Image (tube, rainbow, N blue to C red):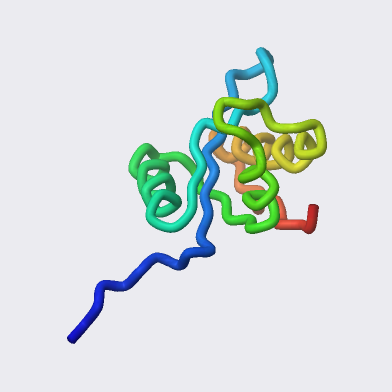
Length: 101
């Protein structure tokens, strides 16, 4: 008998929202397992880029929902946002490397 495959329990996802120069990015969704899969699926359906960095996600999982990211993560998130900005304008630069935080 086949059993349905379970999502990897260690899979995590965090969604950020950024409103330009008004403030820092904010955690608007986060979860593990099935919830992480749903966050990723919705992002892809909406055409939102999904960046895979276990280290960054692990740090962002510690931020409460609807809270701005902490100063320690500004540089990592800023690099990702700058890359996405270039990509949206037709740039072809490689994505930022996943570096230990």
